[in-house]
Image (cartoon, rainbow, N blue to C red):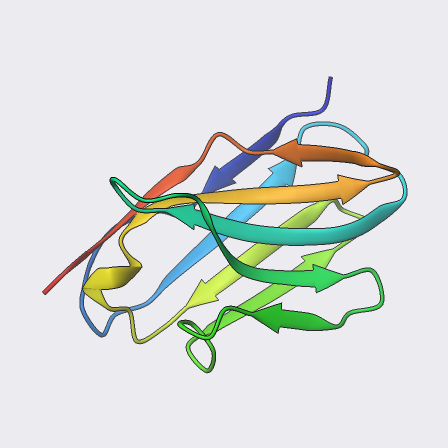
Length: 115
C-alpha cells in the first residue's frame, strides 16, 4: 500500500516562505501528474499547482508568481516552494499523485500564515 507523507508545514509570518515536501512510502510506476491542493477551514479543497510527467506546470491564479512546484518521478517526490505568503494561504496542504489511473493522497500538512 503506497502512502504519501507531507512535511514542511508550520507557522510563518506574512511575507515569509515555506517549502513543502511529499514523498511516497513505496514505488509508484507510471506517474502522470503530481500536484498540491489545499483546504482552508470551512472551504472545499482547492487546486494549488501541478506538474505533469513532461515537466509542464500549472498554478492557481492566486499563487502564480509566488509558488513553485517541482517533482522527481524517479524518486516519487514532489515539493512546493512557497514565497510571499499571505494569510489567505493558510490551510491544510495535500499532495496528490496520479499514476496509471490510480490517485494517491497524502494526509496533509498544516500551513498557517499570520498577519
